[in-house]
Image (cartoon, rainbow, N blue to C red; front, side):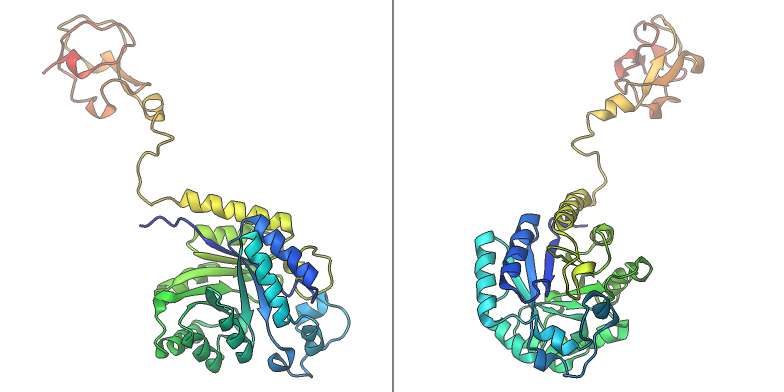
Length: 342
């Protein structure tokens, strides 16, 4: 078993900037302050993503009042190329990596010009074969989100990537549920392990639950990457704010995941550095119950097991019965090897 030293944490800003570049800057600042590895936005052109007559999802209706039109909502949430450049500059200043998910083919091409470290496939594009073929051609690591998907659909997506000569070793598959917020009974974290076992890939988790417990649990179960939405204010208008973490919650999640990273260790069962001194204090050794003279033949009623473990170990309890004492012992003293005549 290897030591998993560092879970990749993506702070998902998404569209929580509400189309305001100043809010996007503040999101970058808060993500950097949390200790996350990356802050991720969304890159799209509304007219290439959704039809003008498309309706909002139920969670979008609940969290974004006004028009029921998805196109109108998304159009207001687009980031321009200049916005991307400003955000990337801020990321570099704050020492956090920049990422974005593309939702159309032209946006994929644009992100490729930005030299991002890896590409994230949103759950909705898992079954989009032209999208998968294009993203595989970039020959960069791919993070594949699997919300709403069956195991068979994940298998087909991986086949598409592999047919483009994309190595499975460069793939991380994220278990995900796309409901905002996700009910705990629908999380099904064990499906993450099912994905790992079925395809022999690295696994992660993209979380839309309320709170931070589930991504922490996913880390303990072996996720190498955690993605979580965050916002500056859950009460802001917009589709994703209510299912996102506040900045203080994001910071708490990152801290907890870092603690889990350390706590997972190397998998070798042995006394830890911090507990070695406790061995002598907590374990027992063979002691004499009463004062015994040299030459005394040890009987069971002469000895007992007590702390500390400075003398003969309990495993020798039966071995020393019938043996003679080389020297006298005071009551309650431990027995040592050189106290016994063999």
